[in-house]
Image (cartoon, rainbow, N blue to C red):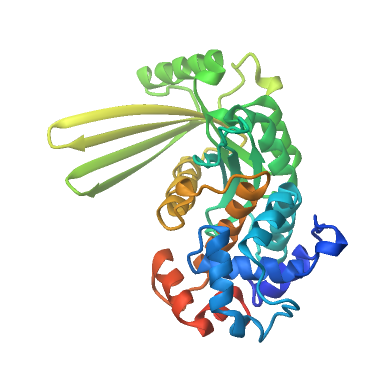
Length: 379
């Protein structure tokens, strides 16, 4: 599913709910104009508030064809002050409302949740740590659904439930790495009428050891009298062979703490083998899930699909948008600019008339105003 027609009108509609942080006497520029200029500028390659101002000045005549601009293009100081003061949580909520309005998240969609640190958003002068953004990525739709800010990575545990609350998750499969393998998070997903696949590692060390021993026993007995399903894939290329074997079992009644993990219905193991020449490496990863029935293929797709948030979101933000290099840091500014990057990425990914990568589409948007209008949904 792609974004529905004319998403920009809906962006304006939903972002109109934002509370303008400025006092009335300083509102020389409309907030909707400031937002629209910034969205367009970030799509076309702007990385700072000075870039946004320069882009606006270069395109002022064009912007005047559909924006009011009562006092022309705002200065970079104005952009900086507005987005430093603008409530980033409210901005994120409006962003998710926009996605809910313009995109159909279908039943069974895979929603991967993971965090990313904005490495240069720290401020030594004020002893402010780098901010950490937790995002929800819909693999089926190839878009960002929502995000929330936390000051420390350890706070992902408290941030994830807040992000889940923003999303209409009914019928979806939520995947989270080991940081999110928490009882309250599993409960929150079930309460949203969704399913979960959670990575199991050292943060739940006792549980991880018990599940590993169970799978070791199953493998030794060839799973005699134990309900299970197996799915295997083999990928070859670039001189290596990768084999992934996923084993899922619905035998969970032996687990002593079963009642404490709401919705827990299956355990899974992914055995990854990589061969490069004569060198062979193996790794086993373990998971807990609320998925019922013995369907190793669906389980394997969920595990594999979770990496989309790394490969298609975080990697793209760093390579195409140079997010890790951004020095914007004052107050809410870093979180708000990160959300503009995600808005830009969503719009660029959903425009499919040009068979180009994100970098290529950004260049064309900068060169061709008609194409930019198409990307932001006016044409």
